[in-house]
Amino acid sequence: MPTGRVKSLTVKLSSHNYAIVDHGTVFLFDNDSDLTLDIIADETFAISVVIHFIEDISETQCIKTEIEGNCVKMDCVNFLQNGTGLTVPMELATVNGKRLYLMFWAYLEGKQDGKTKSRKVEYTLYSEK
View 1 (tube, rainbow, N blue to C red):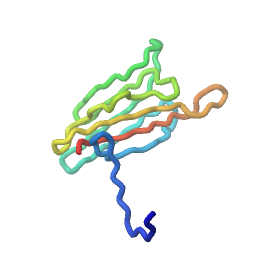
View 2 (cartoon, one colour):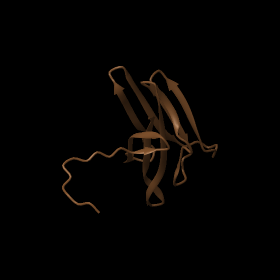
View 3 (cartoon, helix red, strand yellow):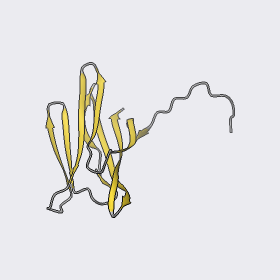
View 4 (tube, rainbow, N blue to C red):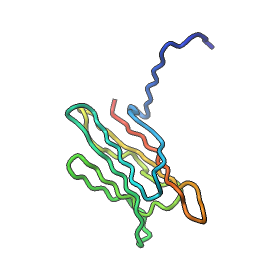
């Protein structure tokens, strides 16, 4: 195995011929808080993605997506099970001729007096190479 000093290191992530342009894990303020991703590609392109978690009495789990201008609103209905999200990356936009995708998975974390304390969201943004 080679050894030596590393003066600078660049790591480029990819998956299935798509560049991973951003990824992260965040804990929302509480289990009902939104997650907003403001994506700015350059001076001419910006988009906001708002992921909102809500409960309703239908007991049906789904994602309702609405696009208003440069804002993609995703209502995640009844994401009450631990580990729920998109099953395939969702296309968000085309930036400089390359399609941009989002993948996310949400978890309910921690319990106190039988109530969930916070929501964790893992996300990945992909771009065509």
